[in-house]
Image (cartoon, rainbow, N blue to C red; front, side, top):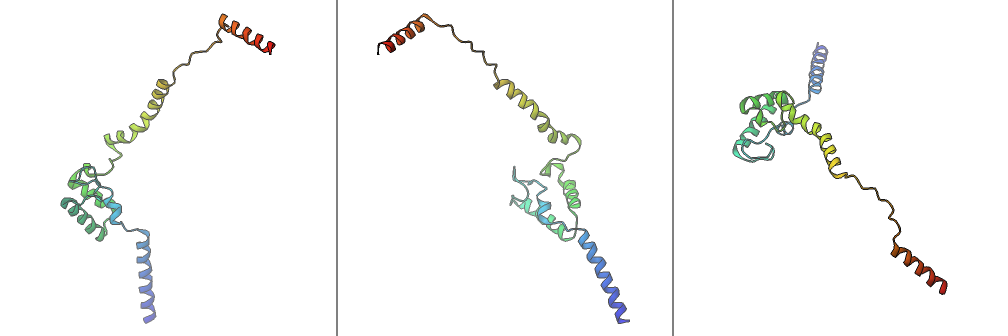
Length: 147
């Protein structure tokens, strides 16, 4: 009987360990990097030390300890503060233009820079020999013969 109980407990522990291994835990740092600071302009939540940001960090830390997933925490914070708190704009709705526009304008910029700086170069034709050049060459030849 004792053996069967030990076997049943071992099997249960293996099943629970397998579930824990299959679902990786969310870490505090991977969640806090998803947000901008509420009060510190231009800083992520991770960088800011204001009281409001510290309160939000404490909320995130609490939810991570309770076992919430990253997506659940992000949804809860966005529901409270709006999508403006996200460090990166969402890739849906009108915000997708923020992701597409730089890549769409890159070929246009390369073309414009190429046309502005690639001026047509004039063809250089050999200049006709001038009278002064001919007289100079004749003088050089005379001096060479004299020496």
